[in-house]
Amino acid sequence: MPAAVLGPDPLELETVGSLNLATASIDDYGTDPVWRIAPLGSLSTFTEVLPPAPPSTPAVALLVPAHGHAVFGKIHVIPRRKDLGHVGSLQEFSVEVWNAFLERSQVLDAITVAGVGNLTVVDHLGQPAHFPATASELYTIRVKGEGDPVIDSVVTWIFIGLPSEGVTDLIVTGFRMIPFGFEPNRAQDIVESFGYLTDVIESFDGSEQRLKLRATPVGKVAFSVLLDRLQDVQEANAILFGNQSRPFGVPRWQFMVSLTAPASAGDLELLCSTTSIPFEVGGLCLVWSDSRTLEAHTIAQVLADRLVLSFPLERSWPAGARVIPMVVGRLFQEEIFAWESLAIGSQDLALSIDRFRP
Image 1 (cartoon, rainbow, N blue to C red):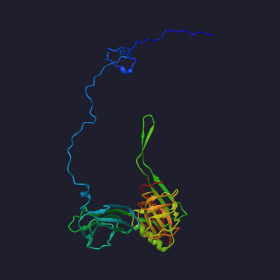
Image 2: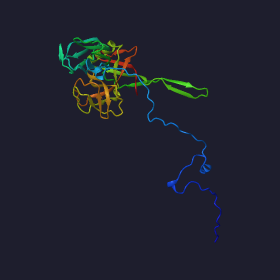
Image 3: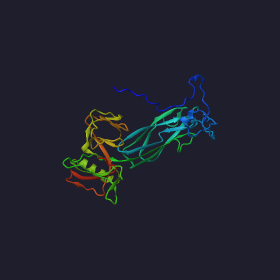
């Protein structure tokens, strides 16, 4: 068995410091031998201690009224602006008029409607009307589906002794469209086409960069209508040729679904299947039974088993009534209505669509 050999220590350090830590002391730099083993590159002397808080910057403050002064002491109309979008049937919404004076009652002297739009205000109080301090009232605004193509009205609540213009008024805007509720001839195809716009930038080496120039495509819907009742023929002919410059509501008939439960007048929900159907928030839908029994609505929310509407239903609908997604389109320059006989008419329609999603 080999025997170990005791070798010398690889490093012999000079004894430094004290073995008794109770009486240990540290000499100044440069005199204690420990600095010769672990020398420091430099020595810094700190003569000041940073303050615990950062330096302050003086600022000049202005005296302004409290927030309550901007809310109280005036009349509020809520909301001040309402955009109805495309209007195809009667729409109603509520407006709150609030007397925010804390200690004074106010007297409503008149309600005026200016502009165009066939808009009415349901005045349940009459004039003059007494508004106690801090009291509020809800008014109903009704906009009919028939009327001027453009809705641009100003409703003003005039209180005695108070400014009204730009203070207690409501601006209502929108466009009227006419839903074309005549069912297409199913013996012919419904053709939808989409137009995209892309900029192609080509490099010298042949590679390309493509930029989308339209957020949503434009499109066209084409279908044929065959009407075998004289009243339908006359009505369709009058609608098409009497409103050539106005937008039409174009149902996408191939996506028609049925109500799974009745819907009452005033409801905001339609129970129907929405799976694989192009309903979209902010889009339009048509509740339809025949060409004379229909109403158009704006969609506020799309759920798995129902649609939530932006405005209440105008009438009651039974289970089985049709719900159809709808887009807004305009007629092309030339559309020909053909009389097949004295009581039968046909029409090949093609309408251009803005913001058309597949």
